[in-house]
Amino acid sequence: MRLNKYQKARLKEFEWDIIKNEVDGEEQNCGWISISPKDGSIFGEIIENFSLTGEGDDVKLLVVATREESNNTEEE
Image (cartoon, rainbow, N blue to C red; front, side, top):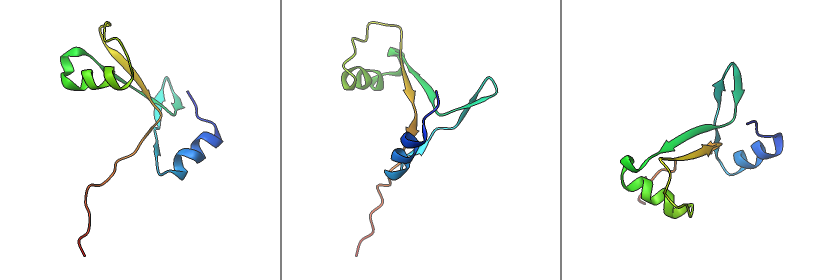
């Protein structure tokens, strides 16, 4: 999958980091995450948040961007 220029600009506007991944010699803007019931509570959270049934062997998520937020707050 490749994001277009508009999609990239919108993600960057809101301070998201676009995924850069090479697959079969081609750069792509995505990465896969596979989560199964053996992953514990995170599997339940994914099922609930995405309104899935959880009846399969696993759930795959396609990620196009990430963002880490800091919990650090400066005291005045």
